[in-house]
Length: 182
Image (cartoon, rainbow, N blue to C red; front, top):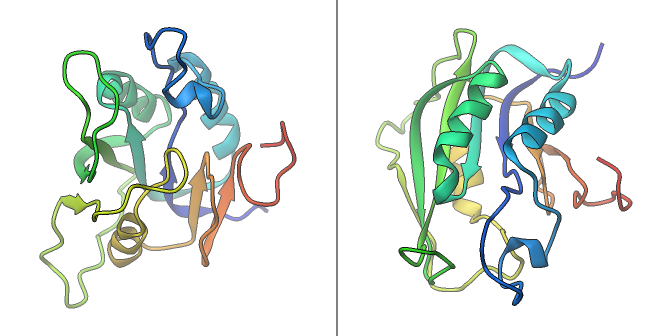
């Protein structure tokens, strides 16, 4: 029997429209996927790997909020709330230059009670600090710390671009993966 994960964090490579020929966005760094492709890939990645009662933290680009909610539902998770990462720099954007990113929180099954041992005032705002990330789409360490304080393991990161002690990771850019391997 394969390992069952109680907590999953995913950072899907959302398909971004626009940007012209300059390739300033995510498509300069990795392949982007449309909603149906994300559903398919995540279904495959999670096949027989999710505990009956689980937590999901899923990053969505600001203009993909509705799609993110549909992906969660497709995977059998129920949206509960969200976290916001306030970045210390401006990103791209059509109407507004993005300076935040949304992480959707959802549960599967009954979910499970969040850990509260001595911490019952965890904010929904994650400060990005003052230094821009060194790698495109890198997430702040604070999100991992928050997840580990609030949700039970084992932990799995989908579309991982780095590794973290105590977490398993899947994705083309996951440490130790060859090109094309997921």
